[in-house]
Image 1 (cartoon, rainbow, N blue to C red):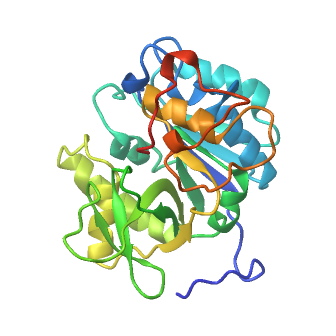
Image 2: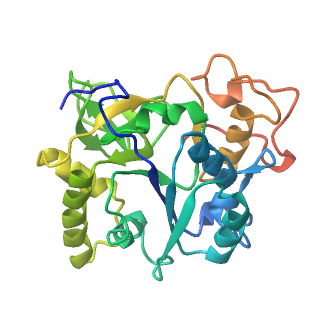
Length: 285
């Protein structure tokens, strides 16, 4: 299916799935008494920013897979849900499993097209506009200081392969996965089938990208790329990440930082510095 940007030709997605079960150990001690998604980025939590973005784009349902300190998430969303109906799935094995297990836990509660998103992402809300339609993946041009899963694209702007740790063994252009996906019902059901195989095989510590990688190879999953390079986004895993995110998303400003794509250590923000304890962060979302 060719990428169609005409909003009248496809039904908008109004359901989101948030994976928020992890312990956020790399942000300790911030996550000792608060889940990772409630980490403050310049006075506003990651989850508050997300829920505002979803409301802004007309989402009606949010399913949250919880684990670590789930009561904190429930209490927060009682106040901040807005017009969105919130449902929860608790993952009892959250301490010993990875996000593939969290995604598998949602297999029975979602039966419609949806957007999959990780709970450690902060981004300009406008970036979601092209993710509101099925079978899309958010990506950004790979930079030397980024690491993690990447993809390469075919001439139709679709993913032709997933790669681990930014290595693809060719001269193809690499794109960083932003960890936001939109799936149609048919794609989701095929993903569930593959997830079942992985979980039954005991592969509960894999990332769900392993499933997507295999499905792309088998041509059972087709994902159209949505490029996130033109607006800021960030994945907050560590204290260094938090410092860099605070530089990209300063307090009380409606303006984007100029020259996005520069390493945040090269961006000077004099009006609102990062937290004193973590001022020397670097970008490696």
